[in-house]
Each structure stands twice: as structure tokens, then as C-alpha cells.
Length: 251
Ligand code: PGA
Image 1 (cartoon, rainbow, N blue to C red):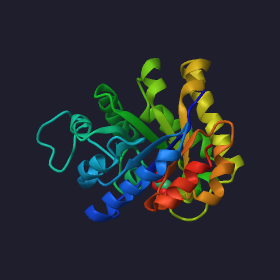
Image 2: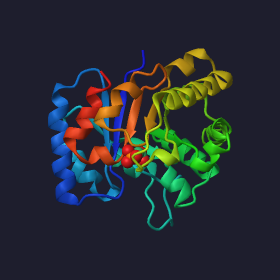
Image 3: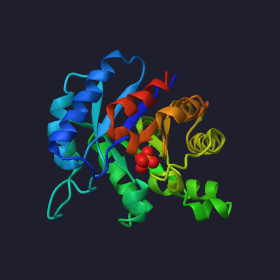
Image 4: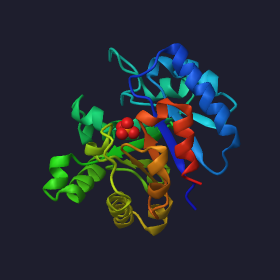
């Protein structure tokens, strides 16, 4: 069975003191949580401090991005090994803000996925369509293109460790959540893509998160869809009570 996985993407928010306080609050509240994997993904400058604040708790650490090269003259970038050194278990790759604001391509994301896996970081790979693409009936074609491009060349064993997050761009930070049916349709399509390329057993084991305006009051319905195994949470992950309210919807 797939274990639910809820991750908080703090994006470019908070300062050192508030990041540590939030991490401590999440770690404490997580003590009573059973059967759900949890992660927080702070800004990279606070990974160290947040890692210390959650150390020994059920909450694991994730980064929001990395570069694919192992080392060298890449000003401003962080490697997978550096993230491992900071205590990261996960790294979010191909978030829509990186695709659409920072111009990341599927080919660039694919290199990062391979580098993360080589360093034993678990990538949380994001895919999702723009509103215009949904309205043009292209949602599943966009998802397929991003799946094929971002996850090219992965062995079955590597695919089984990857987490995929379906995040419709029109639902991120907008308060417009996909209906459980809209989300489930895409999750099922993603699982079929995995099955076609690998097999039913790999498809059945990969965890698929939904992301986009997940809140405590809509989480349970989304998380109880058969192919939705967790959530990647932005805004609501900035408050421990809201984040844990979403986690409660997974059990
Ligand atoms: P949101 O962000 O929950 O604020 O919509 C989700 C995400 O970008 O991962």
C-alpha cells in the first residue's frame, strides 16, 4: 500500500526565526500523527536551521530546487550532495514557478532528477497545466509531455522512488482548487503513463501528490481519491495548525 505523503513547500517566505518556530511547531504537532510521511521544504538558506529544529521528529527535510552538476563554477547554485549534507531527504523539482517564472525546461528538470537520484535524494517532480491549456482541452497532453520529458531515462527502480506531484498551475496560490474529480482524472492518467512505460507494480507503488490551494477543509476529499496519495502544500503549510489540519485529512 502507498503511504500518504504530505509535504510543505514554504517557497520564498519566512525569516530564520519564524522558519525555526514553524518547524518546531510542525515537529511537535506531528508527534501524534501515525501512518503519514511528512516533510517541510524551507528556503535553502534555512535548511540547516530547520533541519536542526525537526531533528529526531517524524518530519523530514526537503529542498525546493537544486542544480544538476555535482560541483564547479555555477554561481548561486546548490548540488544534490550539498542538499544531502544539509540533511535533505527530498528535493522538489520542476515546480511550476520554476518552469514558468524561471524558465526551466523538461530537459533541465530531467538532468536534475537524474542527479538527485544518483545522490540518493528523492525527487518530488511537479507537473501541471496552465489554465489556457486546460481550457483548450490539452491537460492530458501537457501532463504526458512533462512526464516524458522530466522523467526520461529512469530505470524502473528509480521510477519507484520518485514522487510525482500534479499541480494545475491555475490552482496554485489562487484559492481555486481542482475538484476531486479533476484531480483524480489526471492522477489516474499519470498512473497509466507509468504503467505503460514500466509495469503495473511500479505504477501501483509510485506516490502521486496533488498540489494547488490544498487547505484543511478540502484536503480529506482530495486525499481520499483512489489515486491521490498525498499533497504538496504551499500557502497553508506556513501555519502549523493548517498543515496538520491537512495531514488529518490523509488518515
Ligand atoms: P498553494 O501552492 O498550496 O499555495 O496553492 C502549492 C504549491 O505550489 O506547491
